[in-house]
Length: 109
Picture 1: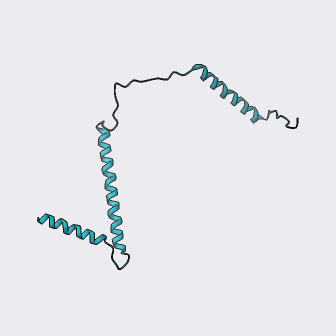
Picture 2: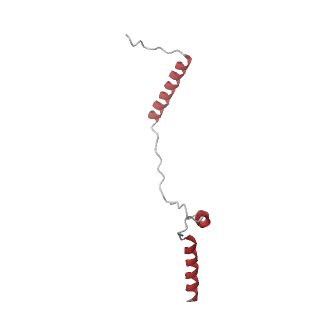
């Protein structure tokens, strides 16, 4: 029962620190609040990183099924040749345009 009383007193002390006063803003209370929130966020980041580190180091984080089937997509050789020739034609046309050997059609005709 005594431990419950001490816990209750410490909780009341914390509540008194963060409670709003009728005197207006309290900068020291606000800085203490920011400090404690920052500590809680920092500790949560640390604990999360430690947990993920141990999960990865034990091999539990990224589980890989050993008996999974590996499927390979076969590339269509004709389609690949068409695409390659298309890019070669574009490169040739770009080179011609760059050198100035273009023939522009007359829009008035």
